[in-house]
Structure formats: structure tokens, C-alpha cells
Length: 171
Image (cartoon, rainbow, N blue to C red; front, side, top):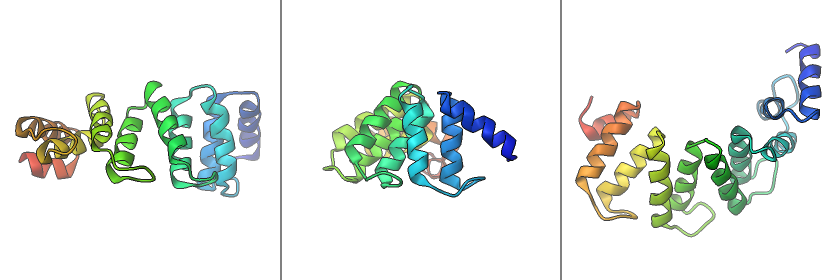
């Protein structure tokens, strides 16, 4: 990226353009053009998140979940993933489900995991469709339901999840 292009991006970000703020944050995450700096990335994501930019909310939540550039705070991550979901990032609901399913910084809560996986799955998240199918198959967070498990494995397989293809017999 040319210096002039970067300067224009920085100017847009400083003037409040959420897309430019997200782009700048991503440059700091990847270390492209600028030195890798997760704290600077978090700064720019926070500004864009204040405007309810779904990508910024999701990526900032991820930084809080990992403790990258900010102090690790799973509750803040969950809140931000929830806001990202409300703003159209349906994989964010999958992330919340995963946090509760794996007990990542919170007590395991399979009912909550099921709830969030289902929301994400119903909105097209292939990863959530697979995990929801597993929950139905194993009766985790819900009563076992082979028919629902099969339905969600098939949907996940249709959306390219290889493990789901094996489960649904679609390969």
C-alpha cells in the first residue's frame, strides 16, 4: 500500500469512517504496511464498534476473547459478539455458543450453547449447523433428536462442512 493511500485511509478513519477504521485495524492485526500492533487494532475497532459496525464488533470481541491488544475479558467478548449478531454477523452467535460449549472463561452452559448455535444455524452459519447437529445427536443442551441431527448435518454438508458430509452420508 502506497504511503499516499495509507494517509488517505488514516484520514478517513480519523474522521469517523467505520469501514476505514476497520481496515486500519486489520492492517495493525496483520502487520501489513504498519508494524503489527494489536492494541492499535483494538483502538480502531473500538471506534468503529461505537458505530455498531458488525465487523468491528466481531473482531473486537475476538481480541477480548484472546486477550490480544486488550486484557482478556470473556464477558465483554460475549457482549460484543451479541451486538455483532444483532448487527448482522451471524457467525458471532456461533462464537457465543462455542464459549459456553467449551467453558472458555465461563461456566459450561449447554442450554446457552444450544440457544446460540441454533440462532446462528438458522441464520446460515455452517459451523453452527454442524455443532447444533452434534448437540441434537448427543442430547447436549436439548433432548436427543436423530431427525433434527440428520437435518442439520445435511444442511451443514450442503454448506461445505466436510465433517458434516461424513455424518449425513452426502459424500
